[in-house]
Length: 88
Picture 1 (spheres, one colour):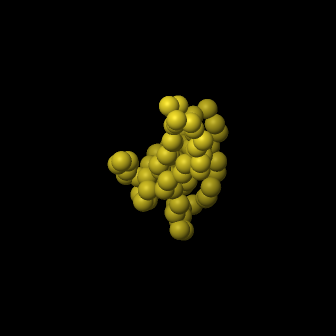
Picture 2: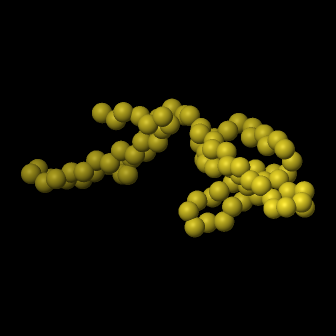
Picture 3: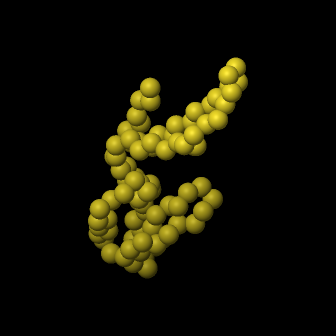
């Protein structure tokens, strides 16, 4: 199972003792839960956290800004990276 976020249900993504994620992408990072049940007692679970390291990816809020002399202009740069990137 993969935890899909706060307040959301989990998504079942596989059966069996091994889950292989081919060509991992950053969107697959998160908490995965392995659950075992043989009908004797309660099922047991363990959480596994998958961190996906990737280089910085930059997006801009707007590709152009129009302003006039003496007015404020706000340029927004959105950076995705793990580990966190230094933005200068």
